[in-house]
Length: 260
Image (cartoon, rainbow, N blue to C red; front, top):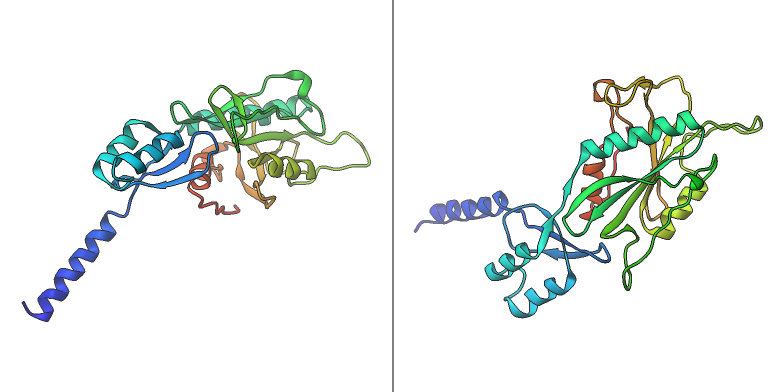
């Protein structure tokens, strides 16, 4: 075999490695933390019990083996995102906050029992105020990620900032110091919507009459503030923030975010 032929073979083998770089990515159903990658040729995000993960390592030849991959897939759920439902609930939060003059909130949650990520509205009226809002969570074990319901892991919270009523104060387009504190304490992303009248709001075609496309800001679990990351649903879907893309990246530990 000539050196030229050997070089061609090596290039082909290297190319095959690039064509199939994907592996399924696993997170623990209790902590939400990364467990690792399997040896499959798909690119799914999965949630699993860490005991199943450890069983595969100990008894099935590891997470890269064929029996191990089969066992992991059988005992885990592929994480999916209901972006349309999330967008609808986010817009309702913005609408209701603007209409009532009180902060409304919605939780972005991962159902660890079936892998579905969706938005869950918090309907407790006594928690609404004009300045801040409370988040009731609980844990299910050591180092548990916060839960807001059975099987519902809290990934993020979104709330509206209503128009400031005190004459000596004005609305500021960013998250509040209280938002930053809560994001750090719970280890989640907090989103704030500018739910007050502004010169650059647009009519929304995908929500109730009179709703507007409003600016969204956020603070990460590390306290990093990102302003103007996108908008609630707007006419022609202009600069609408994609929650599915964001949380998929967060769960895969690729938490970069572009400011719009």
